[in-house]
Every structure is written in C-alpha cells, then in structure tokens.
Amino acid sequence: MLTELRIAGFGGQGVILAAHIIGNAITLVEKGYATMTQNYGPEARGGAASAALVLSDEPVLYPYLTRPDILIAMSLEAYTRYGPEVKEGGFLLVEEDLVQLDALPQVPKCKIYGIPATRFAEELGKKMVLNVIMVGFFSAITKAVSPEACRAGVEHEVPKRFLDLNVKAFNKGYEYGLELLTHQGERTHPGEEMIPGLELENHTK
Image 1 (cartoon, rainbow, N blue to C red):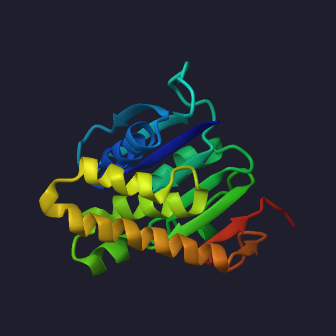
Image 2 (image 1 turned 45 degrees about the vertical axis):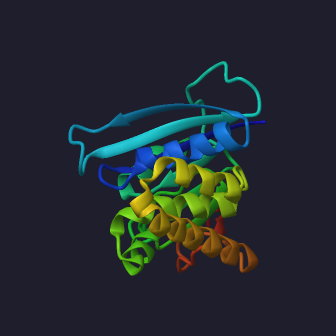
C-alpha cells in the first residue's frame, strides 16, 4: 500500500526530523520503502519548511507527491498552502493553537484532528519536542506506521542525552491521539466551535 504524507510548518519546529523519524520507522523497522523530499523558505529558522514522504510496502517508483493522503500542518501557512491538496477522505492533523480553523477557508472533505502540541511540549520542558509529539499523534490517528516502529525511529534519530524526553513526547502525542479516537465527534460547518479530534465535513448552508 502506498501512502503520501506531507509534514509542513516553519523552520525551528523540527519538520525535517519528524520526517526522518517516520521514514526510518518504515525502512528500518517495518522493512518497507520510503522516499523523502524537503524544502525550506528563505530563512532556515522562521521561514516555511516542509517535507514530503512516499511510504510503501513495495519499491517507490515515483518519489514525489501527487495528492497527499495525510498532511501534518504545524503552522497556519502550512494549512493554507497545503490543506487544499489533501485527498478527499484523507487525514489533516493540525497544531490546534497555531491553526485555528474557524477563521480559515475549508479544505476538501477530510478527517481533521487537532492537538495542542506546543503546549504539551512546553509542559514537558522543551518546546522543541513538539515535532515528536506530532509524530506520536500521527501514529495513533492514521495507523500508517506502528507506534513501535516510530519509537524505534525516534531512538535512531535523537541523540541519547535527549532520548528519554523525546520518547515521553512521542508517548504524549500517541496517547492523546488514542483518547481523541475514543471521543470522536462530527463537525458539520465552520460556524461551530472547534473541538479537537473532529471529522470535518465540507458542508455548505
């Protein structure tokens, strides 16, 4: 099965590290195949950053995204730029404090879930681990990569002195995602209050 994934935010959020964790989870643990392309804005920190992955259980013949099945949007710009590209029925995962959907244009019909990853990272003592929280959230919500494989990807990519913190960050995102799935509701139009973990339906009045 082939899955297209984009992770996007701004420099300093660890977008590329998150992509490496997921890519290594697939190739080193699940023995699948992954390709990654990346780009930055004009500034390494603060400018736009994105990474695109193609994940498959067979060799990847075309390494670029056509329409992503999953978007992890860690900034408002990421949502507005890449949200409309998500396939109908796909997943849109957002950092809910930075992407406040009620004031934004709708995206094609997809399943949308929010997590306060930055706040959780600050509670853990390091804002920089919000990317790993998002990886945990991604694993729980989409089931595209197993939590065991993702944890191994964290271990592969993160320096040992930061490993314990990052495993805690992954677990926080994963557990929050599982909790949302057990309390899932439905959002029918942008006028309703945003509640994390709702399926967004592209209805009009």
